[in-house]
Image (cartoon, rainbow, N blue to C red; front, top):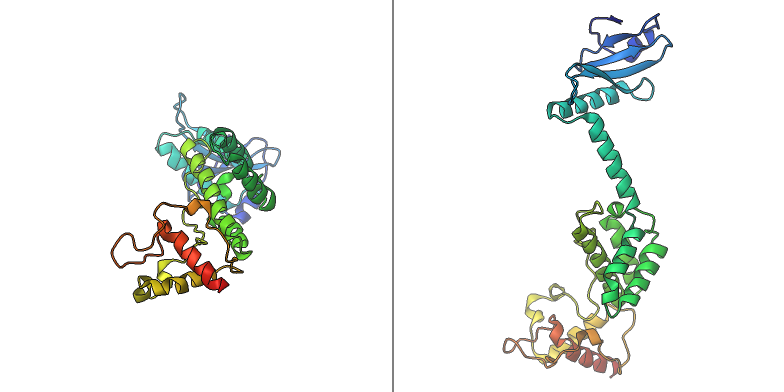
Length: 291
């Protein structure tokens, strides 16, 4: 077999290589071990000659790809990456098989498959499990179309889009619950450590609470004040909604508490951002709206 001295491989030089009666190599000056192998049939293939980890101590050629399938830049980058693995004692072929297996496993871990596993393991223990399952399937699988998507490809932008759409429709109670359901699914998938996901796209997502505004919505002097300002602040909270509820609206069960009276806690402090004092503000605001 003929092997010429190292040359600077370029597209023009590669096209000038003619087939001969036997295969021969053309060495590349830039990447040690990288060669262009020209077969008698005229096929031109990039190969990397190196001592690969394993029982064979002799230098071995391994194909990188045919000329035309890979550009020179891609070939040199691939050859350098393999040389780094070889220096670490890792067989590049074994590493590529591992990556292909991991990629295939991630493609199988779709949102629908993981959600079904979550339904089977977690929801039977919950009183409202059937409602949670119904909402996740309807909103995230059917409407958002996440069913066939690998779970690791769902981003915070996707989550924000779904949540914002429901919030803009005025369904703030439902929006708050949907975000909570979705966060539980992702946290459960991360805890299993077998679905190829390490972070949740719901980590920074927030649904504005429908009962009271954030404390930062008021000037500092207005956040804590006399009871005469309570109804005004609660009317502001209700103005976030598309419509003010009727005067006989009842407070939701999720916020019923034995600590309903205002003023408990620090003396003289009407902290309406605290959920344990929510229902009284709800009653006052509804009464003010009706009046």
